[in-house]
Amino acid sequence: MSARDFIREELTRLEEQGLLRSLRTLQTAQGVRVQIDGKEYLSFCSNDYLGLAGHPRIFSAVRDTMKRFGWGAGAARLVAGTMGPHAELERAIAEFKGAEAAIVFPTGYMANVGTIPALVDEGDLVIGDRLNHGSIVDGCRLSRATFRFYEHVDVDDLRKRLKRRGEFRRALIVTDSVFSMDGDLAPLPEIADIAREHDAMLMVDEAHATGVFGESGRGVGEYYGVADRIDVCMGTLSKAVGSIGGFVCGSRDLVAFLRNRVRTFILTTALPPAACAASTEGLRLIADSPHLRDRLWQNVRQVADLLAGLGLDAGRGASQIFPIVVGDPDKATAVSSALGDSGLLIPAIRPPTVPKGTSRLRLTVSAAHSAEDIERLGKALAEVKSSLDL
Image (cartoon, rainbow, N blue to C red; front, top):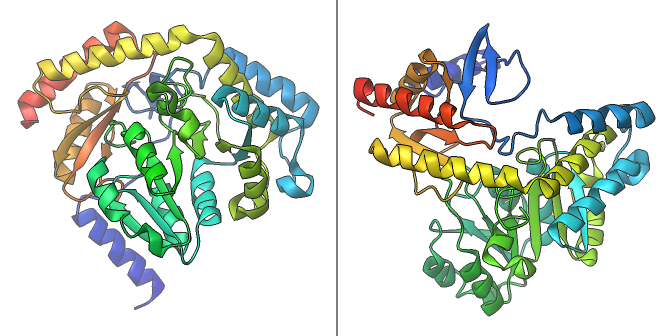
């Protein structure tokens, strides 16, 4: 079979299974109201949780930095690509997270897929939650370490699977703190206890928690009071911070080690300096604007009450992410399309992003949503629930 025939056959198979995807092109800036093909939608699917992606202070930071540093970094960080904004951002992340040091990557995916193989190798054990983000899973598989799952947020299963820890040179436990497709939280206090019991390193991905959880917005580690027990803390700058990039923070020795070992840091061109400036300003905004986090949680509670009133099982409102699990991918697409007809943008999430049989609408809440926006969401969901037996 030729490559062309193989690709055509696979595309046909995806279409028959209801899994073929296509891109939507926004004609406006990111926000709670976006335009696609000339039609305005009220968006409940963005990861811009605090509404900072379009903030004027971030625009100004980007413009001012471009005037001085231009756009492209022009080289990898260890060659000639580290500029003032890169160093400033890493200092700002470390201060924000209460860590000794931080290292920045072009994306959160690159942070995970590079860091994990630097920490463990053949002869080591890496063990992760079954519903960890794909970037964590890919990093674990690339590490060449023995890779095991434990059942989702099941600390008893984690303990059981670590009983043979002594056979391995090193052990690494890695988990999301907020699970991106389910919106629930990892039991970090118990996991930190288990890591200590079994002399294992603990790595936590705070991508969907940074800026959202904790008194200062540092994440679920702060929320549970266990931030100082996390050996390797990963996060992203592309969600609540409103910019682009990923990071890892921890001890100075950890960061120095990663700079010398992580291939996704060493072998790639640095982020544009203006993107770093945007992230630094986003972190300042989070520190300066606790009311945004308060507003987000007010909206989360309103949406949780709304969904419960409609009899929709969409999690417990533990975070800003609500999964409305439909099951069948074609039905999930039909529900998304019906909501689109009402002017709401909530795309269907299908395998392989989520496990087979759990296709869903992933509804996310922003601080930028108004009470009226959420009321409109409720009316549209009520109509779809009635017409499509949601």
